Length: 75
Image 1: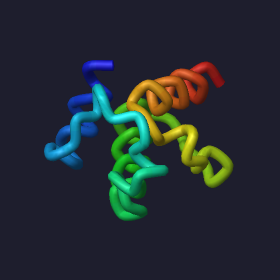
Image 2: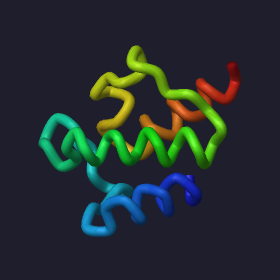
Image 3: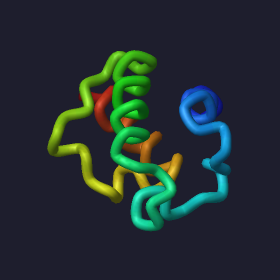
């Protein structure tokens, strides 16, 4: 989680990713932010986030993003 929070903090240091629970639904992250997050996660974790994975539930919280990363790492 620390690595993920560091990545997210580099992209949007103004957001409290630990406590924010509706990053997508409340418009905290915009589409450009999501593109940056996807690219950063793909590179940092050596995964491929596909179009099918681009659901708001996967990006609404840092926990959800971590679960997505772990799922994709498993295979």
